[in-house]
Length: 595
Ligand SMILES: Cc1cc2nc3c(=O)[nH]c(=O)nc-3n(C[C@H](O)[C@H](O)[C@H](O)COP(=O)(O)OP(=O)(O)OC[C@H]3O[C@@H](n4cnc5c(N)ncnc54)[C@H](O)[C@@H]3O)c2cc1C
Image (tube, rainbow, N blue to C red; front, side):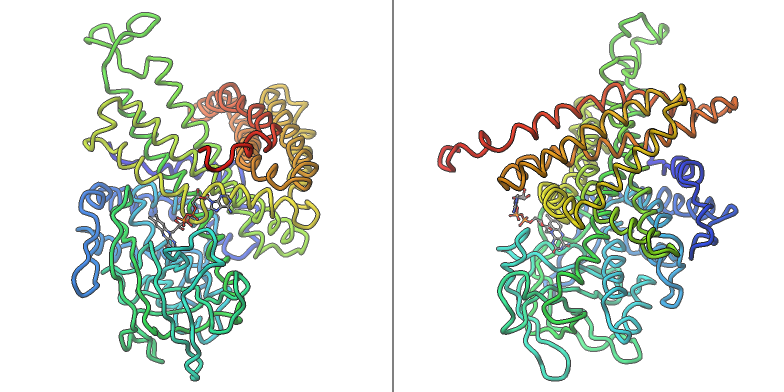
């Protein structure tokens, strides 16, 4: 079955729930008012559904190929799809016009990207990494670097990468060994080996702009001595054309579980010429621009692949005939009923859908704060938006990638044995989804970031604002009887999250292992709270439409899926609270040799 980009869901959220037209005084938002949003999303859906989705299985089966000269070919069809993607202006949708972008809101870019990733995650990573690298140069580069690199990267003529990982250091970047030596002409000689560099080498673009973390000779040990460099495959001439080949190469491609269409490269730098971004020894700060953007983008991958898997499972469940409904045949003239009549199959589909719909809302809501952080006219809103971006990004990343994989696994289950074969898309989607829980900071590390850094920042200002916003929402809507189940549930889960937060404040400081042991359950409780808040807002709009007598069943269905979330997904919240309050004593008791 073909992937159907969920454009109706995006329009519902952006237009009806979050009312983005009310921001039309902000840069980029006026451009998507009055029907333009629909056109942009439709064009993105066409690109995703017609050009990229048909290449998803091709990419999985063929993978990428490394030649003896270090060049890498992408799967058949990727190059022409990439050219069409660039011509459509999709790489630079939300980049400033001065560099060739279309300056549309970040949140619109997120919506388009969900469709691109859902259609073909491995392909989406090529422009996705270029986008992240270009954002880091935009935020931290000199004017000359911006002028030289951005116009080419924003159009996709040149692509980008992020080079952090080395064989001995993944999470713990403080151990990084790649070195940088001053050449005396403003450039540096970069030497070292990086592993698992996504899109590190390929045949899609004329140049690859690597952003590389390295340690300058004599720099302090640990993360305080890391700098960020632009290390292009071809050194650009001043006029912006590609010049001499730099001394870096792809020495191998990783054999891996999924995303076969994306080249995961071993990269060797041998005194390659590189140029510093920002200040010496502040590379992680500059790279964080890229990493934060990438974390939201990876959360989106979880959502997108989960949606594709849900769609495949729902289609299969309507088609596959096995057994009879417990309450009597629903397909009496056929040999059996379609499996969608079975409550347990529906459980898997609705567990998935109720999380996907709220997860999409949560991602777009967070993305909207990303726009407000840079574009809101008043300092108070910019500050709140910055606080939220920082607080919510690890939740979006980890919660939605865990969910995406679980949903893809459920999709395999709905397919039965067929799901375990390669004749149906479920198997590929499950393999593709798995990496999103690991890269861009493994999910356990996201949870530690949330409890260790994000909660405490500015005396807990961000989480207190989040609680206050939920309280205000509940106070405003709890008189509305039709919304009561939603507001009551939100009130309940928020109280549990608040209790968990106080528990962490008291017990996490006293013993840091308590914070570490609680972190994943805390993040999941946070995710459930955020999704409940999203369900309230979606239900509010849907309820009003139903009350008006809307004939479109979209709104009535939305309320059913929302009620399902309250009845069957949200009850996990007290389990998370109980688990995190168990503390770390038993967890840490066994010595390592007992494992
Ligand atoms: C397909 C693929 C593509 C990738 N693309 C890129 C890329 O483009 N650029 C790039 O630089 N890297 C890339 N990576 C690397 C990726 O970002 C790392 O794999 C990831 O950061 C985890 O590092 P690691 O694999 O070394 O695991 P480790 O750091 O060894 O971690 C192993 C486990 O221990 C846990 N752990 C580690 N430290 C702690 C701690 N302090 N507290 C609690 N738990 C901890 C982790 O959560 C994880 O579960 C890619 C990897 C893959 C597989």
